[in-house]
Length: 223
Image (cartoon, rainbow, N blue to C red):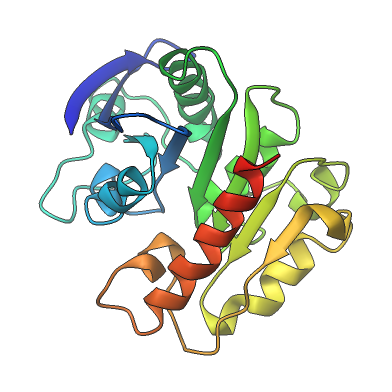
């Protein structure tokens, strides 16, 4: 992996980890959950890379220093006295899409969100032509003042959604008005975990999550 930086839509410098596949099938932008940073994907990004996907894992300004890594984007935002709510991270993800799109030779990318960034990913991808598919973990009404289910009802792209077992009903509500032909909703039998950590080997049932996700990636690759 290579540590890189680029600017958000408002000029804030974003730190990211770039995992480049040898002969990439595509590019995945990896966005972390709350109280977290790009290290959420230190275990899983190499697995996506092994499946043939380059990955860009970003630090959003809404996050924390955890997993032995600093959220450098958050620390810069704090030093500059910039707000760091969930919605404030939207331009970071939008800039990440633009940067990943360039790295992907100006071809649409796959956007992956975890918890609050899953909500932002859905909100953004519903109107962004640089996104070809969206993968979301523990999507819910995380965004203050925004009714996500209402905002994304016209979305027309492949979506893979999963969550912890106790969060299944919340995910169903988010997608209640989206055309079902676009949504692959994997409902785990095991308890699982909140956010993309459900893919970690320490979480029971992770193999089934990866199997379902790989099937989805293969399906969108062939279209």
